[in-house]
Length: 216
Image (cartoon, rainbow, N blue to C red; front, side, top):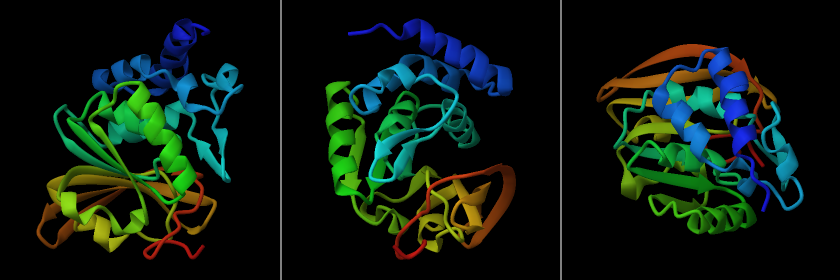
């Protein structure tokens, strides 16, 4: 099996730290997770390129910088309970799992959920829990969460997800009226029925499909 450790370190140095990601937790996680294992067979050579990559079913693995940026925006210190919406290939869940105590991740597409679960198990991420279903409705049995991250763009912030945050919890999600261009926002639950929203950066994600997202 090819050794990508040098490519991984170069990715962290040139694509992530050089662009302003400062969290040592995030940088260490990005150094540890073998991104090549999450790409379809034969695509490992592209794993550390500064670009998203196709993973099948019309979905992509986000470029490394975006994964790092969104993870840093969650402001994780270690030991948290995190919900991820949009498992995809499972890479971002693995990055989160290097920091958080438990990661609950939901994927709409059954085939992707199965593949991600298999790879995560093979790599020993026993603190990642994968479920196939409508992520816009969250994971109510496991709520509430210290942080929630959504890796697809919705027309609005799903109210259900906001209310599955703990008080003080953060939700990071791409939002935009176009299904292919969004603003990344961070929502913080400051009280039982009070939320603060910050605009972060413009992004482009695949559509968030579900009851509280876009129609399929």
